[in-house]
Length: 263
Image 1 (cartoon, rainbow, N blue to C red):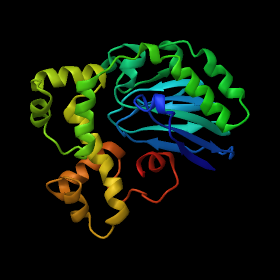
Image 2 (cartoon, rainbow, N blue to C red):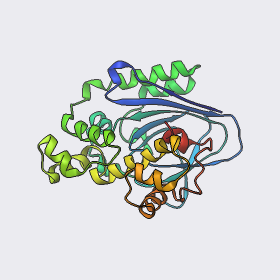
Image 3 (cartoon, one colour):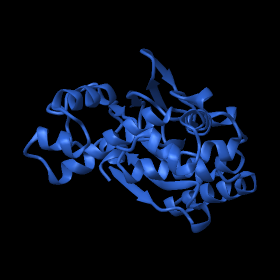
Image 4 (spheres, rainbow, N blue to C red):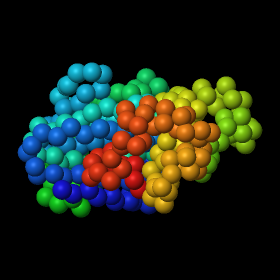
């Protein structure tokens, strides 16, 4: 089994957070839980197809996918050998690449060709090495650079949310970028696909996995350090995003959810 992260080229650092590669040659069917992490992704399957259960039933996926911002967990399962590469996009990247209002795609995983021509990405499936696959993905993205527009204020909002681990109030964000809270909410939903308040909840939830690296002896301490006022609120929020209570969650399991969340 292979889990690997790679940084983007310098020209793409404002568009792409990272590339990730996942390969598993085991044919046995396995169900994976995917948990919100605050990023959208372009995913290319170059192994056997996957199936997705997003709304209570299983559906086949295409080879080229766009996964938008998600507000709750969902499940994937393989139908054979797993081989995929993901392009983890910064929160404003979808709007900058495709010039479409992101909220129309929230909680959706769709075929990439619904948004744009996959074109050169077709070659990625046959490329021999992972280096070649990453290079083809980068070239495809670089071809879209001419379409990117600066989203300075919304990027500042996102930076403040990440810097505070999701613990900053919207009113404080509004004051710092000189926009009303209503303007921030409207702009955020258009460009990111979620409200700033809900997005902050996701980032605060993600921070739990950082805290867990050093704090394993007390859920009360973990809850307080992660910005929760009490343990019951902490457990409720954790269960909302994972479907499990923190005491039952497998933090040490080698699965896709932990690969993405345990930095």
